[in-house]
Length: 310
Image 1 (cartoon, rainbow, N blue to C red):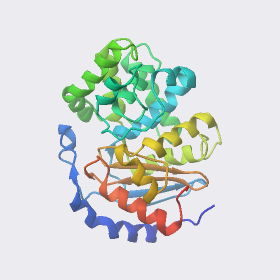
Image 2: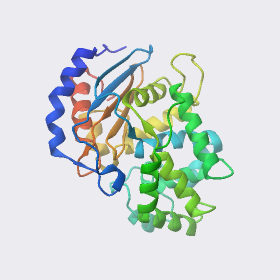
Image 3: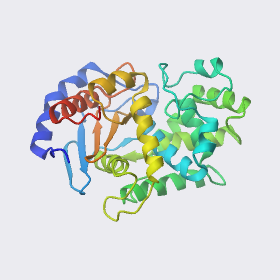
Image 4: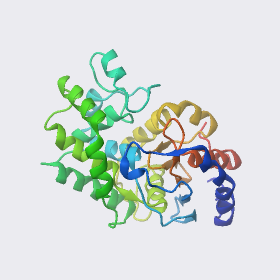
């Protein structure tokens, strides 16, 4: 196992990257996210032996946003199997922005390139089993409760409502996908599931434990119960490497070299086999939609402690 990073050292590295918050901008296309303080920063590392070290504003909660795509993919794979899921969503990275509709029009069949772009994530949310939106979201929350052993995690209704009301592009993507038989059922119901999954509130400790579970091949850190089948956990981590940081995934792989997924609320979750999970929160984003502080801190930690998988 690689050397552990102790709390005082983690606090020092977080202080070193605070200035980078000035280089980004808080997401404002989702109204409920626009008031976030870009200087509220936090980091947590959850080691595979169960120890957790944290620094910064660790009580700050933030919504998963696109980090939820990794979790919903794991649940959809459990519900439907690999063949079913990838008959409807591809496995290839995209150099386009995460909300692009362009590639859907360029490919036949018109299925999304991967589950980490919005079109693919919407299709994955549509695959989660349940009689209605509430049941599907409830199953997703129960899955997260299992992964974290924390039943306090829930949906931020203010953010969910804000996203649902402003989700014009995601509605367009869903209608396009339904036209080409990638999704089925009611469009508004699927959008309700998707916006609520993106609006699940966590803190860095909870998120780093999810990252650690993926690093532990899908097994719970304490009970050793297999929550996600090993093969499905591997698939999710592979997508985190190839597609997890939007259209900056290639440069992130070179500079940091960790399976990771970001979200526009400012969270980043990384997962490293044999080490654990890392979660960083910094609401200021770069032009790709990734946390500027999160990227810089992960780059420093990876280089300083030789964490890259490559």
